[in-house]
Amino acid sequence: VNSSHHLIHGRSTPTKEHKQTKAEKNVAFVLSADRDKQLGKPYHKCGNPRMYTPQNMSKRDALKANGVVSEAINRFARLYHHDDDGFIDMDTYVDVHKRLASILRTDLSDAELTKLAVEDWKEDTSSSEAGTLHTSQLNDILFAFVDVWTQSLDPNEYFLFLDTLYFKLTGEGSVTFDGV
Image (cartoon, rainbow, N blue to C red; front, top):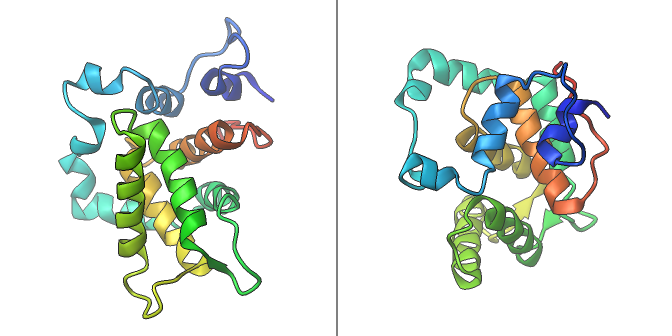
């Protein structure tokens, strides 16, 4: 495990020769406890108009097929247990959503986290007549999530963001961020 992985996860002191990458700085900021205070408003209400230009929208779409991003999304998706047919139940979805949101939205109470999770479940299952969520839909949902919470179009930032959250939720740090 290299030192850049340890910087985000806080498991060791970085070596003098390691210089934090922009992706590491961005992820550390987004996940910092005082992020909203530094911004003067909640991060989830900020937005960056430059990310919505036609050129950047095209780049964002291309990231869906990026191997580094796909690897992180596929590993993160394992948090969502599913049945033999690939369906994720609402309880599983709400549980993971609440744990994830509690990291990113420290301003919310448990009841507010539950309400947000249920609202997102309804939105994410709205295209299904049965109100179900299949694992085949999850990659798009997770991509949209990471796409909103990262600050750049760097696939390494997408990867590191999800890798760090995965570690925070599971305590497992099996995949290291090596800047590739």
